[in-house]
Image 1 (cartoon, rainbow, N blue to C red):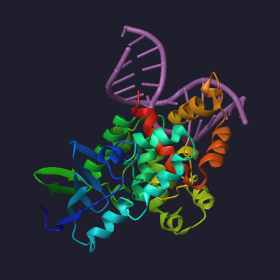
Image 2: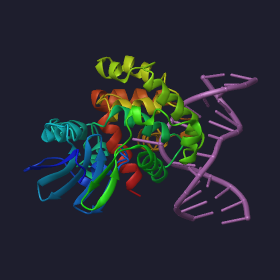
Image 3: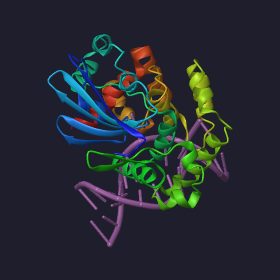
Length: 295
DNA sequence: ACCCAGGGTCGTC
DNA sequence: GACGACCCTGGG
């Protein structure tokens, strides 16, 4: 282990609504790896974390930056442990039988509270892309620019800080296999570094639509990516990111047009707002995961 | 070998 | 406000 890292450990008993597969494979995050059914290892902002679940007990073993003071606080925040998912699921289940079924499928989902900078870059990469490739690109960025951490005999790389990524040029991004997203990643990195748009300021806002307006100023951030950032990094549970899968599931279940590409986004958003209201983001994750995983 | 789609966005008309 | 282009990779 490196000198400026330290080992941390936390065990939580009687945990509710917490299934590893549901949390890590519902499409919200890209840096968690399955070791076996009961074990995942991932890289978060402050270090490498191994999560193991046995019955209703979850343990977290971390190799974390020395500067962190409260491992438990970091874990509780990242895994959204202070939100009552039982009551959310209960409310959503009452809406209709489709919600009930999607929730019973993804009953252990939690919306992670991920780092804003990392989420911004990750979801710019996600545009017109598939999940395995997105993961590969992020891994290569981390390996080239991020800090190396050794944990249980394996090498991991933290996602690079703004400072660590500021010298990456368009060609550097291109060389990592980002394709046409190279310019967007470069521009956005520069905008963040120069504080042309301040991430700290975005985080300090409480109005969701003002946050969205600021996010939309970054190159490569359109409505869908902005909503994903709002949901996965800024804990705005009222947003409803619409992608091909969500369009598909919403059309199949509720709108029922012959050609799903003819369904307007506004139609979907209106329906979601009416049905799910302030819990739209949660509903979106259950539906997305259900539709993608369930054949 | 060929075609298609993937957690969309951008530039142009 | 609609429409095509876009890097690359895996799967049919």
